[in-house]
Amino acid sequence: MHGLIHIILKDLVVSKFGEEKWAAIGAKLGLAESGDGPILEEKQYPDETTVAGIATTAEVLGVSFEDGECASQAYRGRRQESGFEDDTLSRTS
Image 1 (cartoon, rainbow, N blue to C red):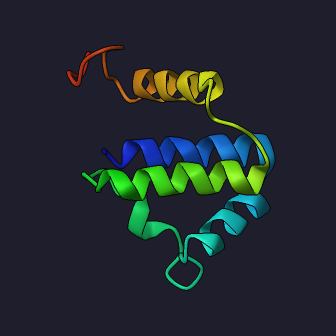
Image 2 (image 1 turned 90 degrees about the vertical axis):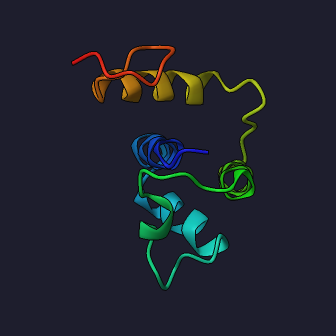
């Protein structure tokens, strides 16, 4: 999956739950020493990496991402801010 998903996930966690929760998620994913840089690049990642990040986030926050509405809204908003059309990978500008 594309790293933009990871970036949006971090933005969502930090804005709704704070930096401390993001740090706890990173620690649980083994990113404490390297920081979160390795997963916040806009490149392709194995699906397992993204799924593990989302599952760990849900676990640390004590929430369920099954309905996905909050994450979906954050994703759509970030894509539009980045100049992408809603359902394509084409930039609008």
